[in-house]
Length: 175
Image (cartoon, rainbow, N blue to C red; front, side, top):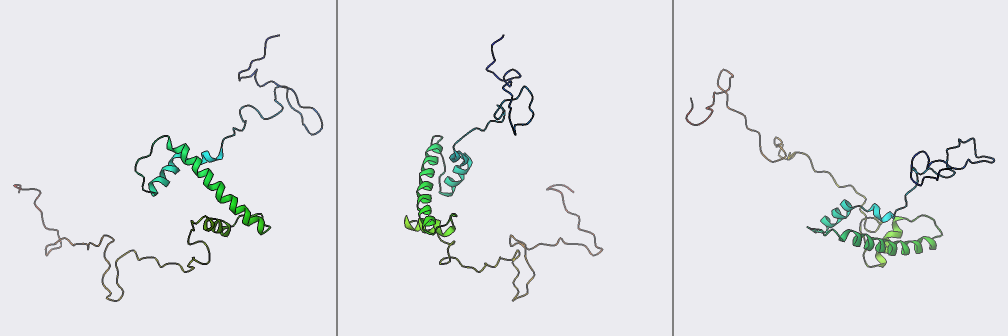
């Protein structure tokens, strides 16, 4: 009998048939667990913070150039910071006998670290929506004609008396 192949392919997929109640009718070429092709690859969830996301955060902070080795260091620092914030959030959640982390839990934990965030809690949130600026520079008090967005008025081309446009010279020295 030939030795079993350790590689993929048709020979590698052969396994033991599942028997017993609730197992169903399976062919002889199936594997008991999940197939090799659809195996779940476990990776750290901090890798979800991608390189472009880190670059965007750095740009927002005013960084112009980023070294290649800094991305893993940033992920480690981010994981530590989030763990610290979530640890205090769980203290607030357990005190309330709740199971859901709310916005106020995060706000209180950040305030506890001395890094408050404004605009999310009722103390600092202004419920009124700000009015949007109009698209044009139209002034209703003087009832002027609206201008374009760049502030330049449109200029009409001069026309002759019979309604046709004036002939223009193409270039210098031409007729």
